[in-house]
Length: 110
Length: 112
Picture 1: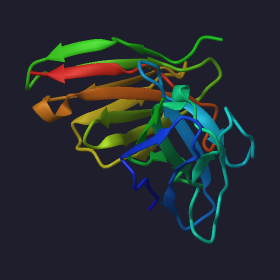
Picture 2: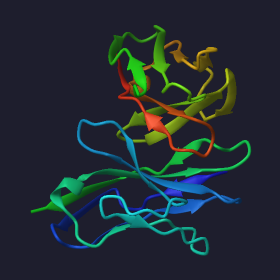
Picture 3: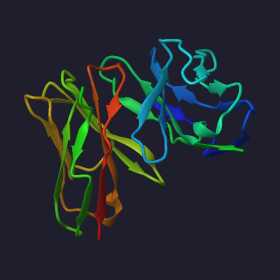
């Protein structure tokens, strides 16, 4: 079975402060990990995926297989980063559906 | 390129009724997945269709069913509606498994 855990339901930081959204996963094989973001009144959209190793809007995420984590980080938060963030996992073989964590609501305070 | 389109956007139904939701994926995408989003449970996977075949199913009762047509459009049906079925139902399309999923705006279902 595949499982994604996001321990923080709510997270508030001040503008310019670093931010880290935690994500841990459980999967016996080699998963594909994603971060999705949902801004207010907008549809859910991909922020980044681990295989691309890109930095999107200043966000990065490193897959740590030893700790089964895929934390999302940004060194300097901006007010426009306020949104709901979901970590997601796609398995392999017959388990390729996307499984989402419960989400973290990030609020960046002025 | 048109995005994922879900219809209708809003629905109000009475307990015991049934409802059908529709999803048109991005052209060329053969995988369509459905999710239920609620404040309490977050995003829960319902099922995934690929080339007209159900490939995976989440932990939902048999009242929830779906199908996919040859043009990759998908429908989701919920029979004998319950108050707890009130949620935002999201559809996502992908080229195939393991690739990026593109989401629709969702259908907001309210059961009264």
